[in-house]
Length: 265
Ligand code: KIV
Ligand code: NA
Image (cartoon, rainbow, N blue to C red; front, side, top):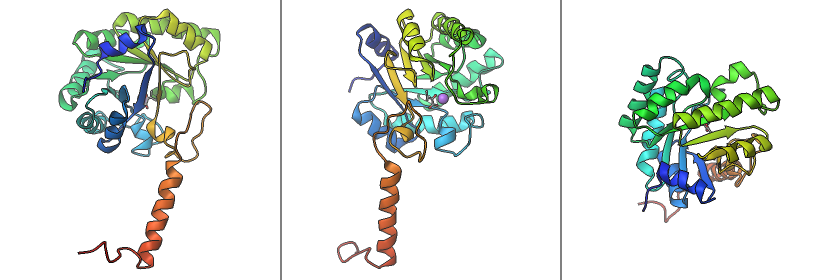
């Protein structure tokens, strides 16, 4: 199996080949995603929400992210594995940020990192990239800043915020990012930004003109009951399927139907 690299990802944009990204946090699921042929597995800090049950991504720690990342790395034979640096590990001193970045790379075997923000973290991104670590940017709705935004609604709808995003995305490209996530921004802006960049854009709620798409795997499989934002296409209803299966198991146990004569020693 030929490993997808950040170079492959950049070439895909040049060739007009769309990039398919899903999040992954554990060995078993990552194995399925990798076998299915996903290009990038993003060990997102959305692990805070879907794996740990936190309301926001703010509380998850570097150590927790590294546990998820190591498990995904052990599963992925083909996919590029990118890991979110969690809130608080890169917004301050850029040498602290580099230390956190190096730890994730050395201790998990991941292939690159993702950080949220633009011009504010440009020097930090440069420093990490200069150390030889591939970095993916993330603009638009950046959940680590939820307490600044106050809501998870669409970003960059007004011209001032759209202009800031145009500046930020250039900063990230200039700093050496190999790709950038655009989350919940108008599709016209995402299309414009995508056309203006040499590096690929990966959209989530940002329209079809992005060079690739990302979804949280629990959301697209329907495991996150009741979470149905407009941008989400739900491919399965795993919550219902698992709920039904567990219900049958419980009934079988209670009725002494399980195990049967073929299911014991
Ligand atoms: O943490 C995450 O899942 C993400 C993607 C949705 C881009 O950052
Ligand atoms: Na994230």
